[in-house]
Length: 612
Image (cartoon, rainbow, N blue to C red; front, side):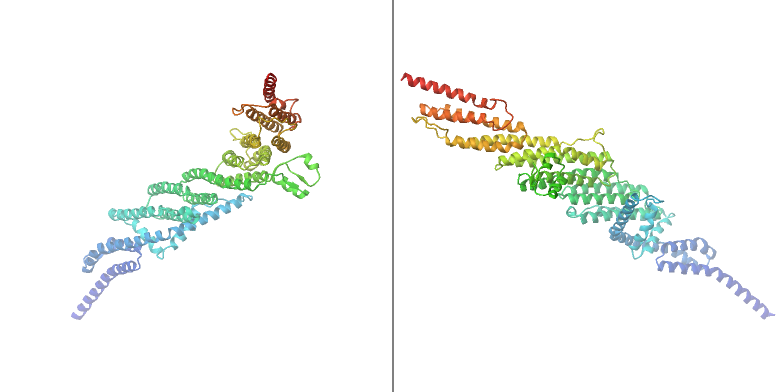
């Protein structure tokens, strides 16, 4: 009987022991699982396990000594997880800092590919095609963000730790504040451009890649975690970044003098803005800044074209273009809009009235318009705005750049009358071509010239001003040539010889004037007539000054006879009609004062001699 009692007691003890062990085994298993999760740095599952262990399993066996040890260890374990999480958070921050440029490069490449696809779609019938959404972009870039870190799975766990720290506000704020503080520091470094960024396009590209990568990561974290960042924080960060980026671009772009680099920079800024716009960041200020860079681009273009015009004008021979075949004729007409029925009927060889700089200048103006159009692409401008931009820039090219180039050529000291005459002819034909430039711009922008507020081209004014300057220079040059001949005049006012022909210097001067006015046949009639009248008046005034100058105190009849022969030679030149278009005796009026003065002096001297 005693043995039976003992046996049953043992049975109850064994059964009780088994029950207690069965109650303790889940606790031990959970604890073992916790240690494994901590060892493998799976922080979020470890926190969940720790929570279940503390609130579900340990209360059931709290009277056991090992449970008290576990309970005492829980704060330490939680602190350990927190420390390890903070360490891994630091590693994560360092990882995304190193890989931000790679993430940004990938994002911008994808945006470029999407833009290329959109352009192809615009050229084809749209069959269920649409722009890739922000959600699609996440699918593309999630892999890139995760692949940038060798511990991407652990990094995502780090972020989830913050979500489970709600019961411990202090710890949660610690993580949030630390993360935001470090990211702000990283943002300041990212937004600091290198000093030589303006030298190459790669400098700008690396700068943009880092900024894009930074905000792609922030946007990714915003949409995959809770509490670590929020929209207000990201908006504040973006506003600061946008202002610094725009300031840096204004500064560095101002150093750029190459229009091709400015154009490439504009395209890169547009891609930068389009990429960030996919992620919901406002980029209107970037496009506003591009309008400022457009003005700078226009200035660099004007400087470039100033050199182009200078080379064209310097290399021109200022002679009519000769053509010896139909092919050469069509080539010139294809470069410059020119029609002349009389010239077309003439046999080969023949000459165009203008020199080579006319078609070259005309085509360079068109090239300038094309260059202006390139900058307006992708700026989301209306056709009217593009048309206005092109016309204003072209007006600057005509009224400032080309006008200055022409004025510089006209004012050269070694410019000849033949070159000046050719410049007048050239500018006349360029002035006539302005209507074709208007049509060219209209065909590009599809904005009719009759549209309200459409800017008109000022080419007509530019070429008229250049022509008037050349005309004035012709008048001045003619007078200077006349003065040079008059310096050869050597009148002997006391001679007794009676001459029978005009002075040699005056004969040479008249021959020069005849040959010069013969070149004026292609000039507008009024220009040639004004030049001839101006030269005759200047010659008359200069001869009168020779006769009446203070040093001439005595005169002989022989000297007066020689002077009278010279005046008669001038009058004969005027009567010969060196330039067509004058009415009868109009040109002779230039010498009438000289004739009257010389007669008065002659009569006075003759009367004085008779008295003697």
